[in-house]
Length: 165
Image (cartoon, rainbow, N blue to C red; front, side, top):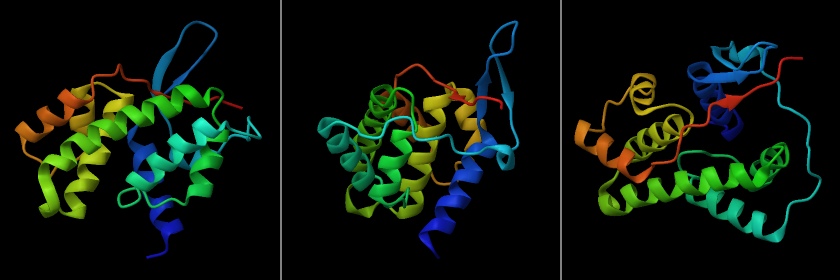
């Protein structure tokens, strides 16, 4: 299957299941949004630092099995972030949790299980544990494995922030 189609399908699945923060005049509230209404924002940073690029390379290469996006696309996506350092740090923490779990599984771990681990960590990065479990239909991971994965990722959830235009 074409990697762009895989990326599009994965992106739509992820976005369809996540909540976003918007800033109405009164106060922040979390709402669901139709993924077909989401458009990528403009590139905010024309250049990233060498340190940022090195971290992005590590993220992209380590997650290539479960997130088949080219390095160029990955770098471009981080250039769209208002604060790429914050986003890179979140992804590095996600990668750390992913690698801790994957490494203990050894060579026997299947791609399907890796994908489920990644999806769970990705959702957990944006929502609390209960919401992440409800969002990701875990068919392979056991309850104990899910608890273990969550023990590796303790960062406060940061919902995806989308601006209405």
